Image 1 (cartoon, helix red, strand yellow):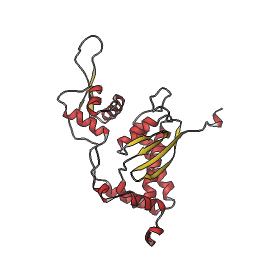
Image 2 (cartoon, rainbow, N blue to C red):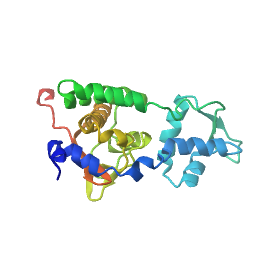
Image 3 (spheres, rainbow, N blue to C red):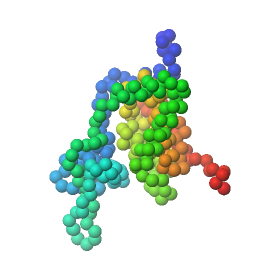
Image 4 (cartoon, rainbow, N blue to C red):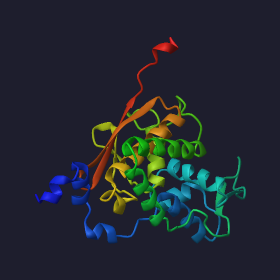
Length: 250
């Protein structure tokens, strides 16, 4: 290890060793929501939830989640299908013509400026977590109300885990549950990977705060206790657990 490497924080050395030039050059894979929208735009006629799910090879609930979000942004609209027999006609969806307001943008320079500002101030980790919580709570509010007891969730996982995974998938973190660990969510892609080597404490703490803010806004009864950056070279791991009962509520 060189003198420069010894002077660096361990998390920064880990981040740098996990980022290879080929990773920086690799184009970002489209998120699931973009795939849903693309399927509707390329279709000659409106599609059903089941039809989209079959085309993308995903669960219908995943398609439904993204269609609701696309409807809120005005990119998708629901139409009533033609009757094919007894019962209510199937709900169909089609893309609304126009530019995609959530399409690619160029904010890397702005992100670096903001990360550098946080890193230069006092207690950058705490400030980054607080900023992430504010953003996570605001974004989570747009995606649904409080988690209910009858809401579908991952078997054995704390309440709200599936909704959190939808959020992280939307942001291109490529989340999945760790085998045999329903309270651990793996993140196999970092959408800010090129900033991690430069500002590891800021970027990773922002991501932790984002998840904490979302789960808190949904009043899920679950907390995100920590985020382990690069637990493996291609994997960060967030740990979740149910909140302890509040003694004051008795």
